Length: 194
Image (cartoon, rainbow, N blue to C red; front, top):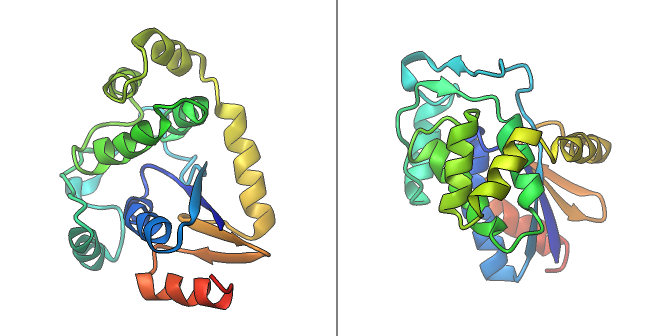
């Protein structure tokens, strides 16, 4: 079973979706294909302050509890990043063997370490920490290569009826939006005969 997941690194529910995707892969042998979806393109290029460094979500306490249950730590953040550069870097690296490590590092850097994913120097550092050669990472970040793929991925998501993150496409038009409890995913898989 192939499951596509549209996500943004600055979305805390997408961070939680890592746990849900891992469960689907382990329990059902699902192949997870992550797709970029810029959730807040209106965020200034240089980012914006996060009031008090808190999670940008009205359900903060519930989300913190879910993240803790999944073993996903959360650090205080000072800035809400514009994620376009991080998503473009990920799209650029998607065919590279280092991509799975980069993908998780981008989430961890944002949420567990409080790093600014809009900062080009941080992105190059995260890419090199993931095993990508510095020169390639610098060129990818500086050129913005991969940005055209963001629009293509977003259009596909919208065509499927996905307008928020994380957005899950299970095939045959079955779509789910959100990082629901594992039991919800089990019901969907059960209905699909998986």
